[in-house]
Length: 344
Ligand code: SF4
View 1 (cartoon, helix red, strand yellow):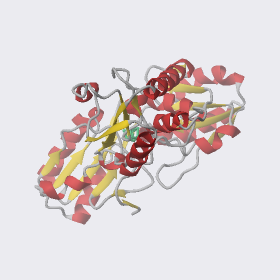
View 2 (cartoon, rainbow, N blue to C red; view 1 turned 90 degrees about the vertical axis):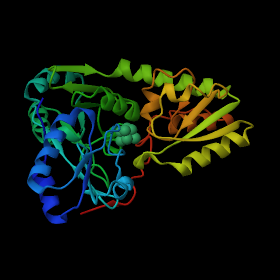
View 3 (cartoon, rainbow, N blue to C red; view 1 turned 120 degrees about the horizontal axis):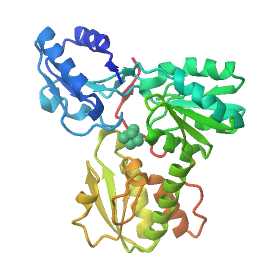
């Protein structure tokens, strides 16, 4: 795998902004390349450049609010792109592109996809450049191919692990989705959100995988957690403290609904929500967390229900005597709250 950070863009921004200090956040998979970039910045510009050592899972993990406290005036979030160039006052999104090609895996996919006529395409940040060549190849093989609609945050057919709003509107126009990339995390989310047959096209393993079983397993566990939480008397409602996940309004809404239905609620704020962090609160029967929904949907290590926002909505429906509903089938599982998002 060759992931290349758009260094030219980084240098262009530094030339333009002439910062006195820089902070950089990046996901684990890009730490080596980011450290090389930091060395280059320091040697070319002689400016302090600090790597944020905390986890950085997504575009929601910006540190704009910490920039001034770290005596800096510029921040880069590496590896997450969107239709916006800047987030907040200081943070620029810097792309990291993967140069792997889908030429081989698409040939494997074509016979598998023969059972469908209309195909939708989705992918994540690093493979966006591969959309067009894959689309052309599938069309040449006789498929009708649709791409997702660009919106105020996401590019054409781009998805996040919690936001499928580009492709959700085309789900009724297609028979199945192909997800371009090796990320089961994104492909499972796509399958759950759209409820369409979804195939992961992994260019590294050169294999095509049907996501049905993985999606069904998560859906089943998500429903089970909701029903378990229905029996809880004491809830912890956790507001995430990461910049893009700060859903205070939703936390208050859910707290109010739970209290209206006779549940006791303890309110928390947390940056990292893990089984270890929740372990000391033994008197709490179930948690609702309004941060990253994937903490709940993929979180197989919790010993009590830890519900995401869509699951909490389902719980409220049950408390109100309504049907649980297909709560994961929605275009977004969280409304990301990245401060003031700016178009350049
Ligand atoms: S909130 Fe969304 S963007 Fe952030 S880490 Fe979770 S899935 Fe990714």
